[in-house]
Length: 389
Image (tube, rainbow, N blue to C red; front, side, top):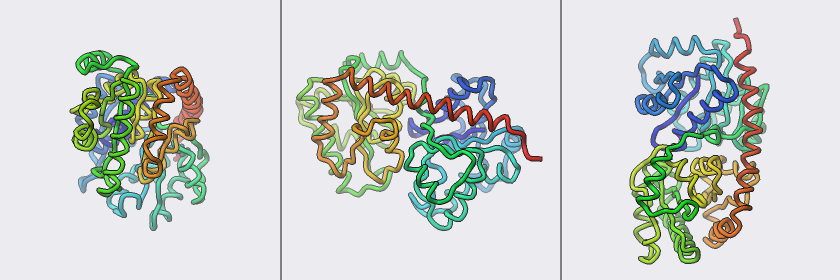
């Protein structure tokens, strides 16, 4: 059993196919049931043609209704319960809403009580505020394995005394995403007059997702507009504004596109509707570079072989440190702390020495692939572990 989280964010969508690809590659023949925390029909429609053998079941823990017969049967038959990549078990980061956190953790409690092997595959752990600090470190210590998708979370869990048999770094499962929509990308580039490797993309993150106030949102937007303006004027290349989250489409128009100088605006394209990760992946593969305040667009770009810069603010979470762990620290920027200049210079450096930038991407993916093989070996052993009687 594995999990999916949302269908309004290309990262949340791509996490699950990435994991399924890892099973197909490293543990072929595994039967996987995906437990959907939301958007069951959307996930079923998306996954069925791509992974026909995968079952999708709705979680019973987001409502007061009892667990369905389908869920109970799937849980009873499963040899392993595996939490996919995300940030699902943190408490006190967004709010201290116990009723939000506990439903997400309930399958782990069930597995623990049933003696069923269970593990966490490459998550971030932001915060365990009281009383969760009395619960979650012990719960995680009872898992067969816990992989953290950056070493910052790893050190945080260790500081809390979390001691499962395996507690290690493991790349976000989105790094294994490989689904493509080449026809969409060809058509999209032609319609928007974009030439392969002659444009960059920009993905923003605003106050619609929390954490930011008006002042910081405006400050970030001003820096990114300056980045776009300088890049277009100095390189003559185009910029594509594209979303990771459905709610960020209109803010990109209002905060970035609309205020641009007219000469720059002629070289900027706006993705005016949401897209699936297959489509984004194929477009990112054709971009010269991806600049994204959202981590999973960065991950998809690197997995597609494209350099990616990550201007981000601290509250976006520990996941930003993935770039440091993959040897790409020079492409990570605190957008609150730096002016537009360093981000622009990094983008221009990629533009000038593209062979060197591509080599950095390949080096990062070598780390990813090595850890994927090592972490999936641990998952295989847990699948083969006898159940407690």
